[in-house]
Image 1 (cartoon, rainbow, N blue to C red):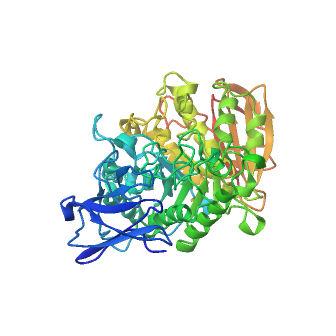
Image 2: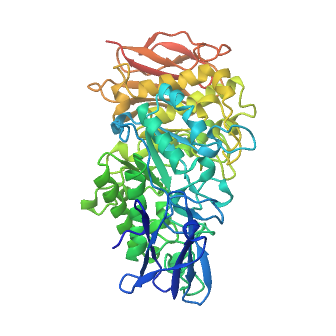
Image 3: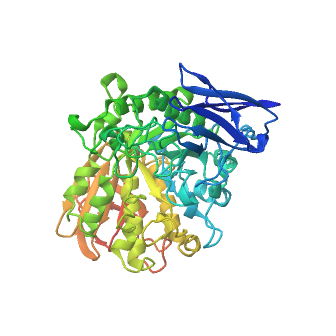
Length: 578
């Protein structure tokens, strides 16, 4: 198939667009004073093409399409690399030039040491209440993220979006980067500067539906059943709760999506992806074990996406947001799996809330224990675990600290913030933090409230606690290798006092014991059923260095049968004394 979109040469450009049912197609733009230049159609492929002289980078352009229905539409190139405006602007021709300074690649951290950090560019660092955050302002926090210890930044969608703000989950232009964020140049600079600091960047991409203002809707005037036309299913397979589902069985639509994957890896040098709502790609009802609503075309496409990504970048991290506990999502393709490296596990944030008796989740420790022990295909790397994400902290909910304590700056809130992150960082799986969790960001997670970075300084001790937890998770001190294993064993489950103790790793693998008091009570003379020997306290969440008003438990080591006092919401992480 011919290369679609715009190919820019020294003195001319070639425009190509797929519109098989159109009666006439012309290109208009700055180079023609916005007068139409007719394009010729290849009847076999449905691609229209024209060579135009005197085209330069920065020129605006659109396609004038007389559709199958006789209606003339002025539409953007579906593969435009930039738009003058996210809603109804024109495409902008780009030469793609960027000086990567040799930083196209970053050494990907092994999966057992990965720690992800989810951010929304629009609110990560806002210059002022009236201005969206952007890649430039976000770059200013990359040193902070490196020092925090995270290894990979997960960007919520950054493609052009309606009204230039939002979360980006209703994409209107898959190939164009949102202007208010800094456009394609800004994204490249962000990736380059992240790589400079050893940080990987993965993109949240949306292929399960396209937004209501998408250029693609009834693109060349052909459609059936009053649906979306050539880019979409024109029957009930086209319905999702958020927008129209692409036709994964049409080769040209598959290429549109797969070429988008290639673009992000080859032109922007991102290091992987999170695919939004893969369960709604593969099943019209969003169900497991539901053959009547399955979309086999989607399963094949997901396999192709993984193959394409790993062919271009063998160590790319490709994650599915499936949320249905289906092990085939991350199973190898030779066993019929889709071949994702890992998938989001939405279970953990809910059972943490239940253990803390927050919200409407079932109370008790057993549900938490059950979720902590899960794995896909016997491989703990195949789970992304977190105490909060953009989903669980929104949509009628709040961040877990805000749900637990009305005053998110209180002593209790500080204790709970450490506790929740400690669980995510000591549970088998690849851990992820939601931006701001480490400095008590409150309320719900939305598209307009900026992170309050003053709190990172005000509560620097809580940030330090997260830094220490991440270092232990990555075994930076050389004695917490058990946290890098898939092994977890419950040593104590005290439902009355709401105390849980579990061990990560076995005796041959630097075992680590985690003790958590989920209650708001201080328990005196509490006996711990520890394994034989002395255990050194490597992390003590009650340390006054984290907060001067904590009631510190001064305890360098513990052993079997010792009675100790457990402050409220205490977390202890212990290693075997050598």
